[in-house]
Amino acid sequence: MIDILLGLRRGLILRSERFLVRHFGARALDVPLAMIVGVLAALVAASLHTLVSYLEKFNTFMRQSASPWLFILFMLMPFIGVIVSCLFQRFCGGARYAKSLSPLILALHRGQSRIPFSEIFTHVISSAISVGCGGSTGLEAPSVLTGAAVGANTASFFGIDRRRRLLLIGCGGSAAIAAIFQSPVGGILFAVEVLLPEFSVAALVPLLISSAVAMVVSRSLFPHEQVLHVINPPWRTDAIPLYFLCGVVCALAGVVIIRSAYKLTGLMKKYLHSQWHKMFVGGAVLTLMLALFPVLRGQGYGFIAQLYDGDMSQIGVSSPWLNAAPLAVKLVIIIGVAILLKAVTAVLTVESGGDGGIFAPTMFVGAFVGFAFARLCNLTGWVDLQESNFVVVGICGVFSAVLRAPLTGIFLIADVTASYILLVPLMIVSSVAWFIARLFEPHSIYNKALAESKLLSPDRDRAMLQRFSVRLCLDREFIALDASRPLSELKDMIGFGSTQEVFPVLDENRQLAGIVYLEKLLPVMLDAKLAGTLVVFDLMDNPRGELTMDADLAEAMKYMERFKLEHLPVKGKNGEFIGFVSRNAVFKLYRSVIRDTGRY
Image (tube, rainbow, N blue to C red; front, side, top):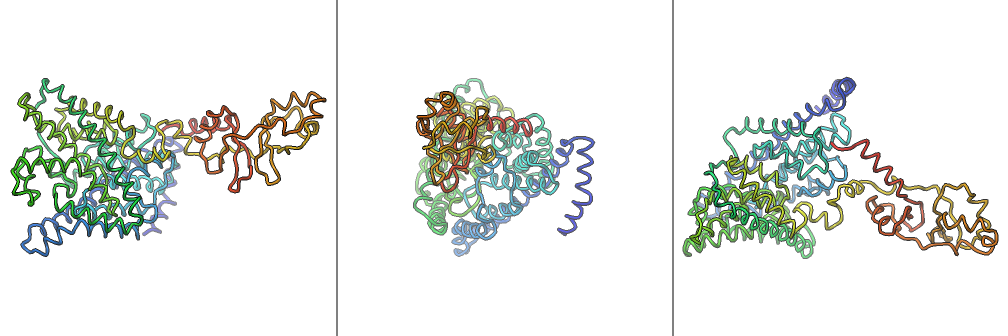
């Protein structure tokens, strides 16, 4: 089968591509390839959700069974899911298996577009096992990673260049979101705000096509399924001030999610050194938490629907050990646990060895935050808020605060909940939550670790320079000087027409001892008396801002700006001097990248 595909690729596909490119330009391939990516990403997302659906039905059967052994097995399913998912990742996913969008975002910012073919199916199986067994995460991040792998490998199969491959990766991620939520606009905005570091109008058409095709395929396969479908009453203008206040509360909840997730991840890495320790300790703690509070189990979309309907009795019976408590006390405990611990259980699921993302947990917390805010306001007796509306805007607010994607939050939640009637409140809550959250936490949950590790910069120019090593601008042609050499001997060595502006002074081990600048050297060389009495050491400056071969151009520019230098010395693995990087060479490379690749 593989030989047939490769033969077809060589004999027909590549020839057709060359014909289209020659007669219609390179962009002629964007739309058909985006359609292919949309179909494949939707099919993969459908496979993932089908697997999870079967596992959830099996869980429901065990929970409702009269057999105590099956009920015990049901309680242990999250632990089993973590173990099986972890083992699958270890033996099938490879050493670079990623369970977060952060590595993908970093790769796209650095222009890296190679994704292993295996990631098309490994995320599907791993996350289906983890979430289907009760893990407290969502399927959106694995679906986006799978869609990105579909886009990258489709581009490789059709021989697409690196720049257009990045666009197809974005199309794959966009199609995955569109297929899951049946929201093409949300998928496009997610790709633009979260995945793609650069965007142009030319990229919009492929993103539109891939998202639209993915939604059509998803709706054809699951015509009656939607994550959430609600009917909202019209919003009231007298509640506008409270929508602003709700945005502030959602922002604070989002900051808590980001920091708690980041902190717990750090603690597990610090105290649980091996993956086996994480799997057993983290899995055991996760299973206990989910047994005590089943509201935290799974993706949580069912509980969001119950919140919207105001069906608090079903949420109240989710923890049988609280049956003796009054309903009000029980609800306060469960709502507090849902808001404060959902992100914790999501991190435990992933870090213990499971697979999944923070997408669904964020929406879950947002729904409970919005409901709790409206219910507390109503209990004061001063206002009468529509609680169902605040459930929807709460989802949007926390989503925007955590992912820093306000437009995605507005239109994705409006699509998912069929709440375009709430567009103005969604805009208010999303923008306020985004703005306030940035004051307390400047980075999104995906970018925080990358930014603190100095792997990702909000400055797009710096991010572009981080893609390239200093090797690309390294000048290895230089005249080296000896510190004890008289300046009078340099006339024949250097000459007055030299184009070299800076000279390294090396010791016997070719270590950099200092630097001599031509502008200081020439006046002395013209004075015969001074040139006869001075040596190179007398004009030598101490080297500043030395770089290694592994440094990137962003680091080079940082040193040039800090020390006000035009040239930086570069040393090899053993500390030996190997050449200079100049500011002009960096700018020349930067201009060529902008000119040749530009935006998508």
